[in-house]
Amino acid sequence: MLRKSLTCISLLFVGCGISYFGIDYHEKLEDTSTNELLIGHYFKREEQVKDEFIAILEIPKLKFKRGLYAIENPNNMIDKNIAFLDKSDMPSDDNSRVIIAGHSGNRSNSYFKNLYKLKNKDKIYLYYNNIKYIYEVTDRYDIIKNGTMALEPNHNKKTLTLVTCKSSNKQLVIISTLKKQEAY
Image (cartoon, rainbow, N blue to C red; front, top):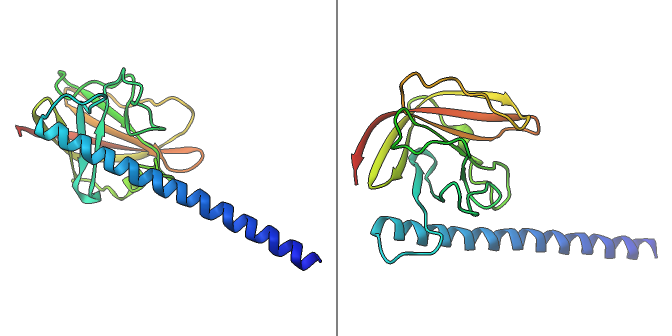
């Protein structure tokens, strides 16, 4: 009797696990296709699309390309996408400090899960207002995860900062500096 109960409970856990990962996988597929569709609209400048991206972040080394919503857009949240932080500038601003955050981990919204692979001199592209901003990674460090983030001053440079969780009490910060910009 005990063996039969344990078997039933085990099958129940296996079924729940398969359902959980199946739903997560389905959400990831749906999210990826929506992201690709909106990126296509962004570059083709086709008809106006509700909630369209205002910028595209591309990290060639990671084969990563993801759209970004305006700061005031309700989809500009790390639970839904990568997101501009409230204090972020836009790349076209003088001495801009663009700050983008995203989740790491193994869920469907863990867009920055491979950010740790970036090294100095790796390229990062940010497409915004018909300009391709080409950044190069110049620094990376960990900070304590406490809900705030103190960043070093940018000293008359345009920078792009990417932030993600590294562990339950640390965050990874990747700093890159603008090297050039070109029309696309």
